[in-house]
Amino acid sequence: MAKASASSTSGKSGRSSTGKKPEAQPDNAGDNFELRSLQDSFEKDKTYKASEDELLGFYKQMLLIRRFEERAGQLYGLGYIGGFCHLYIGQEAVAVGIQSALEVGKDSVITGYRDHGHMLAYGIDPKIIMAELTGRQAGISHGKGGSMHMFSTEKGFYGGHGIVGAQVPLGAGLAFAHQYNEDGGLCATYFGDGASNQGQVYETFNMASLWNLPIIFIVENNQYAMGTSVKRSSAETEFYRRGTAFRIPGMKVNGMDVLEVHQATQIAADHVRSGKGPVLMELETYRYRGHSMSDPAKYRTREEVQGVRDKSDPIEKAKAYLIEMGYDEEKLKQIDKDIRAQVAEAADFAENSPEPEASELYTDVLVGNY
Image (cartoon, rainbow, N blue to C red; front, side, top):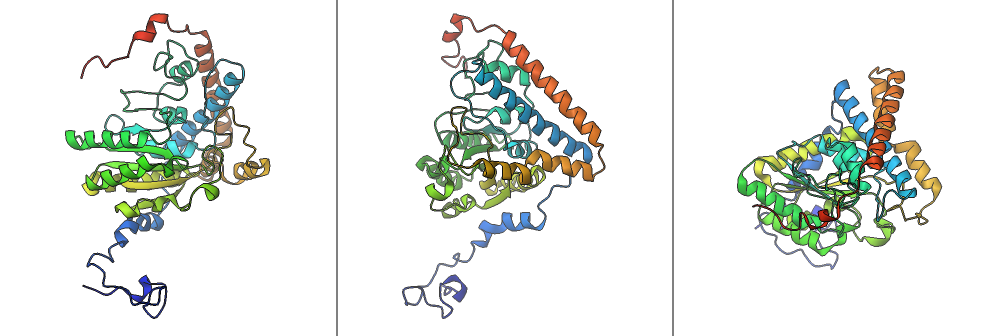
């Protein structure tokens, strides 16, 4: 057995902080470099080399999410959307960067209740998403899921879950199904910094690592959970390290840069698909609105929010990349107009769609077939 090196202790003399010599370590004690290997690979080249068409696609998707969510906020204020409504404004690069690196029809996705942006990033028609938000029959769940419970088995999108952190063990179940069926798919399991302190999250980390499940755990760290700063609520604020105890490699990513998110996701997905087990990604992002539409967000200053908008906005960053590539700025303005018109059309569609019949209450109570 090898002795611990001096660099692994707190003193240069090779003694621990207690003054005693460190005990002999097992032979694999020094192999924690494996837990840093993905981050090390990512640090060597953090930006995805997107073509102009690819970057333009990312830009359009993020802009669609932004304009859609802005309109959803307006409809909520007018009373067309009831219950809770959690907007994705500011976090667009996370969903677009990750989902663009996944394989639709092969991989599965599960997330919490801030889910509209994820569905739009997955290419689902904004009309049926807006119809769902407003509780209409034309909605993707016929108006019964609403804002918090989006769902599409066709796209492999399994919610939309209202209980904080509850989707994480469900994500492990989806990953186990991929493994069991040997279909080559993986599960992207999203949760927030607030959910990161839930016990079920760590139980899932342990099981996923033990069973070598094909899963990417994705922490959308938007800094404030429901309304409490990460610095006040978490002893370990570097969330990508939280899988270390379970031998899950971590990656820390700028969630405000869609090219960086896409690049990191490709690295993580390659690791998982090669049969090496789960990865934990922390996406540092920021929500511009409150936790939900009912949250006035008095726990932070307007200056702080505006500072992030001015310096780190993901859409403006993608726009700057496009202009650097020589893309015509006038065409970008036209894209914005077109997307605004598309969102207006979706809102009109939702407002003019009928509400579900009362009999709809009794459908989908049980799974029809297995």
